[in-house]
Length: 79
Image (spheres, helix red, strand yellow):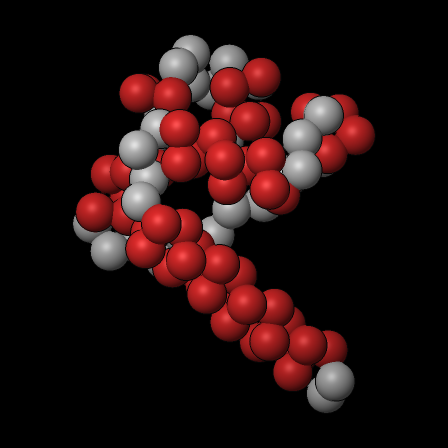
């Protein structure tokens, strides 16, 4: 979310499609993109999403999606 704000992709959290994507059942994960450039952390990204009204259950879903993607990536790299 932070990089989208800082690059001007969205001008405010209310414009960010995150909540609509979650409501539509899209598999979403949160990341820091470039923490050095955007001065954020993963915890900061989750806090920003929560400040936009993303629920604890939705945030847990984002974390689960990220874990599943990481597990798939590790299995591909082991081949």
